[in-house]
Length: 220
Image (tube, rainbow, N blue to C red):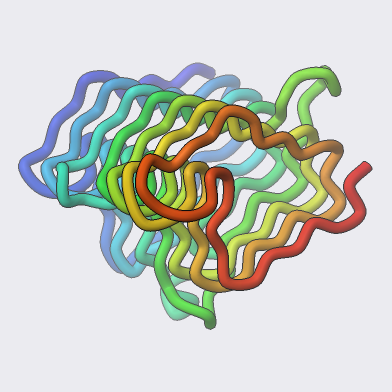
């Protein structure tokens, strides 16, 4: 069926959902939408501390116009997960047909912030839509103030065997990464296409990507 979280607000983190020391799995839905939620701390829509957040086999996943506090991380998603609290990647998107992050805002990571350091790997894999001409994973118009207009990763981040991936018109004000800032490994492998267009940083480095180690391989 269809699931909607809209216009929820919190004094602390997680405008719609906050979890700690556990796993959140959202699976086998027609659509799941988080829209216009506001977190008083980090995670405009979802704030996960020492936890895993897993989206699996949904037709549509949308995070739109969610906002974290002006000093917070992850306008849509903040995942401070560690491997001791989940048997899978702390942040996992797997088997979904369409994933959209648009117009989310935070200080660090306009759409997504993930932590965990070099021992942790966050993962988007096997997300493939029915129409190969449309993006299976889209980050559009997200904004950050300090790092990663769309994504700020303080752990390893991999995109494996997905459909088309697009980063469009994401913005960051300072430091690094108009679209993506990653302090560990950033890997794109086996995806059907990868496009970075119109991303920018006002006062820093890497209009599209600012990264420690970075690879793009086997793009179809």
